Length: 469
Image (tube, rainbow, N blue to C red; front, side, top):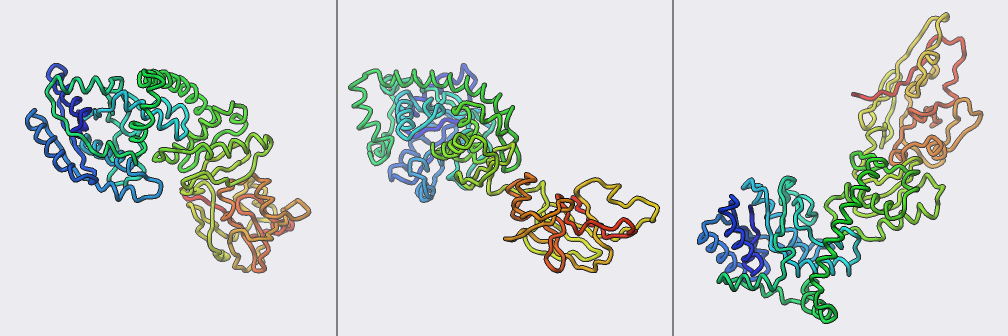
């Protein structure tokens, strides 16, 4: 068991209590201290923790972190940078020692502060339940840290044994056991949000309710139970309506619209969290704008992209509400980003593993032509008199296709909408054009009137769309 020790009363008492219980429980303890590089006295604290660990016969790891550098990133406070650096450090120590548990000294007064912080910042049920007595260390989001400082901590539990214990009780334990903790002077610095709550706001609230800490602790326990029950129900909803793809989550639109708004919000935010697990705080507005759209336009089934946050956007794609990352690639669809010639015969390599190939085919006059044999959208046939080359390109403003059998032309964007092509793939969907830039094929979808060949022909250029497996 790795124990996070700062040298203060809470963590020192925790280490002592666990050390007292260790022989009968069969625990092996290891103390871990992180110097955040913010205070000159931290070096003395590190020596104190290391010497105490030796005195008590425990292993100890001490490291330093450049928390100010982490906090220099936009939107990352010094408090948040220190928190992330500390948990990443504890995870690294646990991984190195193959420890299954990391213990920290958060107590009931810390819990009250946390709940109020979340309330003042605006939080849902997950935030208002406060800190959990036990959770997977991997559930902590450490987005401010570079990847090399994060560990795969899926199998490590983070436990908070003091979470229902008052700070006054811990202080009494410290005195009773003759412990000499080190006090962190920064705890009195009210420029930090948590310290302002601790020293300015909580005393005023306690004057109204002397049992505030106990009351908020009970609230946290109650909401933890409610959150767990709701999560079971929403897990079932998620299984019913969500499709998980690489960098895209699809929510079945008709089913989603039938849900109450609270469930809609929870599922949208779950999709965001799944695509961006490192994000800690997703603001109310990020989901509400999207839910307002669904409510205000109940029949709309196409539209977007609608920006969300952190490179995510939402799109209405007929049967689906898609939450899409900017890293999403349309790997299911052929794509082209720059015009390329298609020689006759010849082939063009498209993106995402697709190929467009031109071959001359012929048949006997007594045989059925190939378009009677191949009934799919991945082949067209053009006059054998064409000498080429043809060109494959993406769409341009004003593009229209004279659709085979339609008796007229359609704008390419309108045709893409009618065919319900995925929005993410439309901008670079391949079009096959001739030397006059006449569109011959919306590739894989609709051929043009140029593909209407006389009944008596016995040869043609066959253009095949193939995906490499």
